[in-house]
Length: 151
Image 1: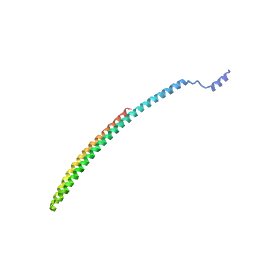
Image 2: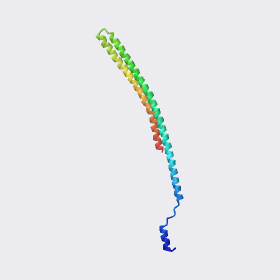
Image 3: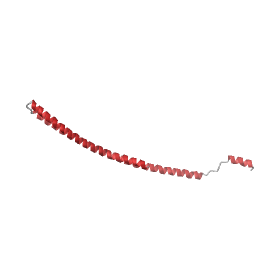
């Protein structure tokens, strides 16, 4: 072969290509990607399970506190209804208009005191419910934020 023929042949020849080096790099890159995906999936799965437990706990707390509030409200309603019927029975037996005014004034004063006490009791139960309901959610959010900062 002449010198020009060799130069022409070299110009059109395919350079040597080492496929094994590229294959090793692709394999390494793929393995690294799979490992990162598994790690990310494990973190997401753990956080989803924690969120599910938090929701279950929160719903149970909401249910029990809702029942407590309902029972307290029903007890107040029952007390107020009984007091109203007792007042009506007392009004039926009055003999003068002055007695009606006296009974009505005493009833209104007594009911105002009772309603104030009932409102305080309902507020205490509601405050306790809010604290119990928000505690697991608050701790879960704090944990999630902490986990995100660590990652």
